[in-house]
Image 1 (tube, rainbow, N blue to C red):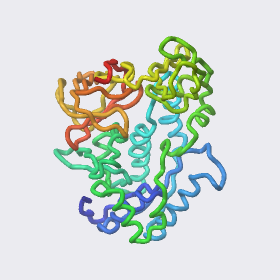
Image 2: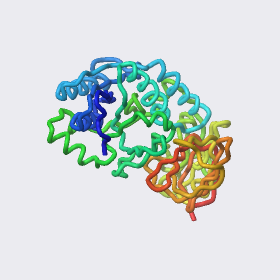
Image 3: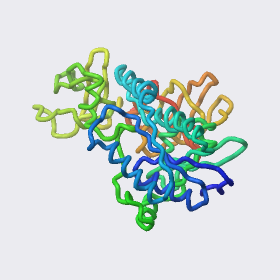
Length: 370
């Protein structure tokens, strides 16, 4: 639930044009907070009156008018390129599979945006994330949303407890269906607007075609387990372990008509190796190593902790043990194999509802699915 509104405190709501941030502003206003909105435009490669950013700003403006709150506008486009987009391209170029939304939250939404909010006189920053906060011992705990299907703590695994201390997540106790129903009942103009997907601030794109504008690929071979050529790819770094869509393999003599999976990505030789066996041992791991682990709040003593974790946003949590050292490195042992943990992706660690933090995968040990 929302904390009581301190007298004279101003909360700046990051209004994206979507229904979640709109309802966040509505709930804060209902709770007695002094509310102002801010729309961010951080991607400057899309131009034209029909681009999504223009429509999103118009939707945010309509919401602000309805709620009778000021709407500020800001662009952190150069910082977004330096802090999020450039590292994203560098990671892909080296064969990793990064998650730019994670860094966007830490560097832009809860970093630069908060600094801008303070300059506008705000004491708090609110977003439409599905997550909860629990104050305690001077440090905020990040908890999963009551709506586990929409929970977004995975994308918040690199924020700091200091960043959370002045943050508000008004939707953490609601289900998405309740959010839309409330928006419709209160007449918000974007109550039926489709949820945004795709890369943070960039949006939905035909991913490979879009990425090739900034990171041209070199065509190479796709080989099966016997070393036979079964296709060609436009660039090995466009693909991830376990991927089965977009390979363009079909009609291979002697092969059954079933899905192919990438089980190895050789970026040095620009080769993809694929299999039709979904139980291939290279596709499943019980042990992963993290290059760095970020704790949200004070880290526990070095050693072994029990909990659950996942390596993809839509993946169910799997019971695991996390052993870490004070230099930040960590190893994770899952109670059952997980599918295709991929270097560059984030592993996020939970103890019950508590999101402890996360870190990028450096390597995984193949163990097979059983």
